[in-house]
Length: 410
Image (tube, rainbow, N blue to C red; front, side, top):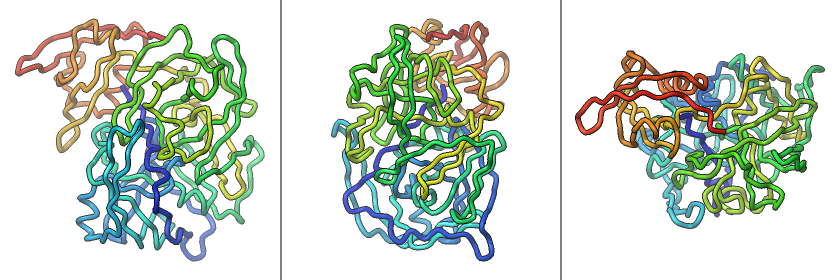
């Protein structure tokens, strides 16, 4: 399973303000373009901290302050911390411990930034490296989007940064107004549910979430979980796993484009915490749209003018699917080529085959697990309904063979 990340915690913390937002294009440049990686629908960009340490960050429209998820890297740079904080996650059940460091330099290709505040997590709560299967050490958001027009080409795998006064909208791109509230972008779009109820929804546009769409039943009594749904782990946040129901809506309208049968997450009360001030201030919204929907377009974010522009790409017509195997994998080891099964959805094909959380994958259809990356492994287990898979797992020192058939449960 591609774990659906909701990297939207710690967005509004008392006493944290981005200090002197200092991103600017290097002298003589009004526009830069550089390659990105897109893994699990998330955009990964290269970032150099204090001119010394090259790292890789998720580009996230839902995050206010830059976050470093592994404290070991700030210790290497001998960064000084101005404050130590503890913040409760959704439901007030788990405390997230972090430090604040100021006057940090952040560099991206062709872009230099000085005087930034950065949140450094005490522990690697998100385990981005393990659940994405690649080296990712942080999250970068509003400080970049607030200064530039940012174009994400999901299909071409590149990011274009343009000075606002040098930006010209291309004719073939559609336009939607957004409202930037408490540093985050919101859009109003029509959604039609399976019962044919049509409503105008206010959604957070969240590049840091790998899901396609989240709707909160608590936000509007008309939002109901479809009759055909499954109970599932739907993501991970700083406070732990996020559970809910997964089904489909009839359609969502994005400008003149209409996407049908969109896989939609309906979080359990308290898990996603739409009304939690830590996550989104006091801003009301019905839900969020994320990477699995956004990746079907080339998207241009213009925070200064409160607009987004978009044009469909080759992925637009791809059907929405959801975890046909019922398995969630976690990559381990120095090379991230060992895979532990961390969750098995009840009633899924993996569950019926007798696979259990804690099992370690040995082989898939005769190929050693070490031959896969986490991304290619997830693709193999989400290929198409009816696909037969023979796997070997290690459990308590014994190798067991299991047969399963991929099934679409929604």
